[in-house]
Image 1 (cartoon, one colour):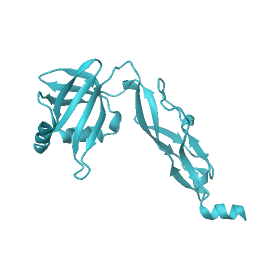
Image 2 (cartoon, helix red, strand yellow; image 1 turned 45 degrees about the horizontal axis):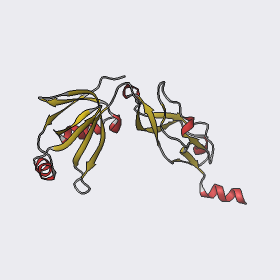
Image 3 (cartoon, rainbow, N blue to C red; image 1 turned 30 degrees about the horizontal axis):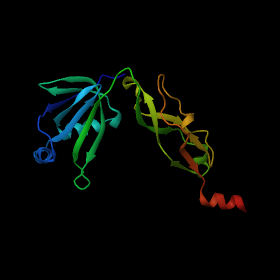
Image 4 (cartoon, rainbow, N blue to C red; image 1 turned 90 degrees about the horizontal axis):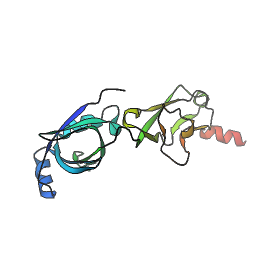
Length: 195
């Protein structure tokens, strides 16, 4: 469990599209904060600082302390969603949600492989089918990523989400099992098998 970073924002009283446009033109990011029975609070954030937070190791699953200058502070906050300008690729809006440290939240965590599969050594190719998984975890228990050793996988084999080892206190957030990675059979090998 690592120490949570602190992210500072400024409160704002005005809202609306015109205000948001002015803030963006001034290089600021309009955002809102809500959750845990608190009122929705309109804030202004530094887009570069938020981008840095979102591109760290935990990305979307980062849990941080939010300090509102001259106002409240919240110890457990996550980025619920954010919008990016499709042309400029700049952040244009963000929603911060205050979460309960004792309740599980649904998050999407990346899955990485370790080892080199038997199938790859035989000419197959590792193919990512759906290399991320939804989990339910308390904010302090959210893993940065999950890893799975694929050394024993042969040609055509898949490994399923249900085969992942989950940390203590973390449970699946999906209902139906699914393939995460597959060892694809080379076309030539498939053709030879038919002959």
